[in-house]
Image 1 (tube, one colour):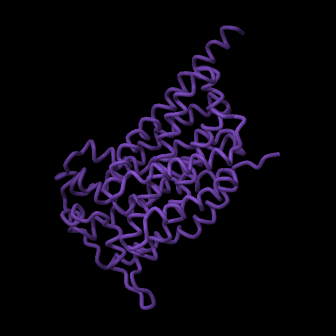
Image 2 (spheres, rainbow, N blue to C red):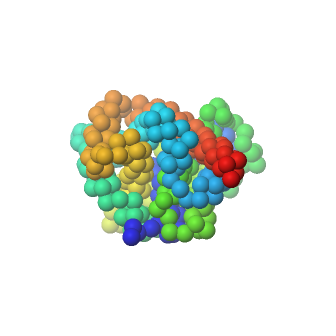
Image 3 (cartoon, rainbow, N blue to C red):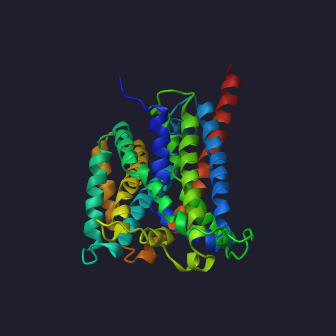
Amino acid sequence: MKEKLYPVHIAILVYMIQTGVVVFSLPRIMAEAFGYNGWLMVPVFTLIAALNIGLIAVVYRLSQGRSVFEILERSLTKIGAYPLYLVLIVVWSLLGCMVAKHYVYIFQTMAFPTMHPMLFKLLIDIVAFLLLIKGVYNISKATMSFFVLTAWMGLLLLFFVPDFEFARLTPFLLKGGTETIRGGLNGYTAFLGYELTLLLFPYVNTKKGFIKAVHAGNLLTGVLYTLYAFVAFGFYSLGQLTAFRFPMLDMLSYIRLPFVERIETLFFGFFFFTVLITIVMYIWASTEALNRMFPKAESKLLAAVLLIVIYGVSWLPDTLSKVEIWLKWLGYGQVIIAIGLPVFLILILLILRRKEQGHA
């Protein structure tokens, strides 16, 4: 009997997939897009993500826990589903790839500047592969351990309380922003990752707690993102937030401990654990789709080949700015998948149900 995922595993997995290095630039994104008190849009994005999760809940209820791949192949035929699989594989695998390289470039600005970024990227891919081949249940157990190692970092906000000023928030609400739609879309991509739970239907232990766990993970992410953004808006002025590329990293540099220098490097290193889970889950999702296209191939071999291919692709963007451009456009594709795939599955399931009732 295969081990199943419990609600607590799902909740922490969703939180770890959503949370990443984007948190360090989120206050700037909110400031640029919405201006004064832009942090207020973070709870709004949390709510939008919750509504999107509601679509996944409808899919889960209509499918009765069946694999989304089975649903697609029943409606589109196996060959007909291949183009959709290819889109999912490309977007998800490249997202995992670029998230890793984004982390590498930021970390390299803080430590090991002479180390070749692709060597660091290779080490991350090897670790990701070793975790990936253990299967989703063991990935979830590792996620629980990594969560314990990183959850305490929210307490770092207490260091900024003495320098927090409500006057910096000003009475203006959402004024002074530029490119609100595009910037808001970029901000919303920070919440994505929950759509991967569509692939977890066959792995869950209980039907009742699954969607509640997804909502819990999203809520935890939303609460922490809101706190980070709120503190940043009270710690920096709007002009400073828009000037700093990674405001949260600059904030960490203000923390002084007697026994550690460059404390922000140490804290950023802890974020490797959340980044690793994000990478692993996107590659896992891509491998699951690849397995449907090549059912006779060994899963470990497919994962290895996929990682080698995207490692080659990761050589193309050779600067941090270029990586961020890739992530921006992949994020737009991810938004389409996060909303469009559940809607498409709902339509398929309703059509299949009507056909079944017609034959009954």
